[in-house]
Image (cartoon, rainbow, N blue to C red; front, side):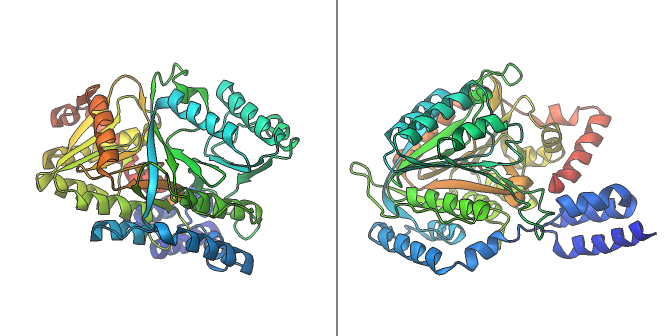
Length: 462
């Protein structure tokens, strides 16, 4: 009887606090029908917000406030007035400014990305910030390990942050070898302390590297040999990363700095003096997002970019189960005559996410959205191309976890030259895809349709 009463109380809590109606319904049904299973699941995985981090951002001590004020003052000469209200909306969502004087370099696939990153680590003079969702103790992980040790031995301060769930298989030996060289190492624990013990369903999915506050990296890559295409299960790995130089790097640095402060309680002493890139003048906004935000930043960002498109919108995502707002925005864009293309993997990585897509793809296809499946290997890049004017590179997948449960980071670059580079890159990718048809989905056996629908109903709580 007590379990059923607690299930009913928890169902009311889910009704009042869930961030989507679909999520509320999924929890309420589960709590009423299967209270013995759903009740512990709800208390460990059903929390709608990430608490504590908001307080860390909003109730800073004097040291944190002074650092932020100095950083904001140093970027003032590099602030770029938004060219239109669409860019202004992105700034408002990001709570970070559009800066000029940046250089953005596309890094296509693993060798280019890790060559660039390791060369950057070897250039570091004062400090290095490194954050990944997944770090493995394999051949690539050991290469990273060696570069970090070499940096620390020449006097560079190294801060290494990893997600405790994503990197749960990372052995103590790997970490102890780093700390033995005075490298500052910490997991990002969403469940830190007794008060926040139930925050187990949140993840820090960001991938950030910053060298001396002058160069930064972000994008889709984690650290493991599969990201170099060396895992037969996934085959060739298609991914994209980004290297930034200029004032926008301090936006990446701020995101890491706040994560480090949550994880350790420490205030890292960093360089907050913005510097313009000498040769290029690209505009960039860094958009951090996560479950500590007062609104669904990632979902609203995607919707804003979709609505801003006038003739082209190309999107790539390995996990494509967008919320209703994003689905509606994509359909409406196609109905307006926009060339809306969505590239997703041919082979599944997470089965439930893969199956979920079949329940809503027919409606999108009928509205004119073009769905493509990437054939050569696993597609993991998270890219958006908006017209000929702007593009994004980041860590956000088009699913509920990225929209509401993960800490993510995105670079929005309203630059025609950068958009042209992304356009050429994606044209090559689309040439290696097959286009999905309504018939192939509707001709699937009934049992597959039922399974897909059930998987879709579970997507808000995955």
